[in-house]
Amino acid sequence: MIKRLAHVCIGAADLDRAQQFYVDLLGMEIAFEFMRGGERIGFYLQAGATSFIEVFAERESRKDDRASLKHFCLEVEDIDALIAKLTAQGVDVSRKKFGADNAWQAWITDPNGLRIELMQYTKDSTQFTGESVLLD
Image 1: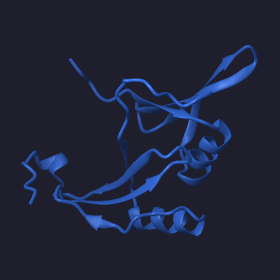
Image 2 (image 1 turned 30 degrees about the vertical axis):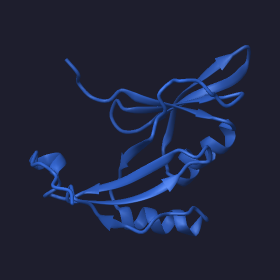
Image 3 (image 1 turned 180 degrees about the horizontal axis):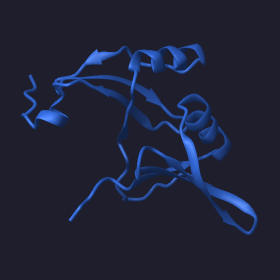
């Protein structure tokens, strides 16, 4: 049986830029690093409880038939405060909108072009109510 999302794995052309984005701008913490031959080749970011984002260095872009990660979503405590912080740091943040799932959302892009949804749940969010989301 599935208990929860364990992690998503993303590739980074520049680990230092990825760390600056996720740790310094988004406020996440590094749980641990991956080392090979004395060189850091990746790290795990704490994304709440036992959920993580795994980041590995990519030496070259892949052009194969593997599925790609379209986006991932981070639940946030105060979306307005995070939008203000990111905007002040020069990060391009979409306008906040109220989604069909009764949750607030905004979008950003990491240094490698990966889209990240920022979501703040409400008491009526379908993630809690289990109701179907009706789209136009």
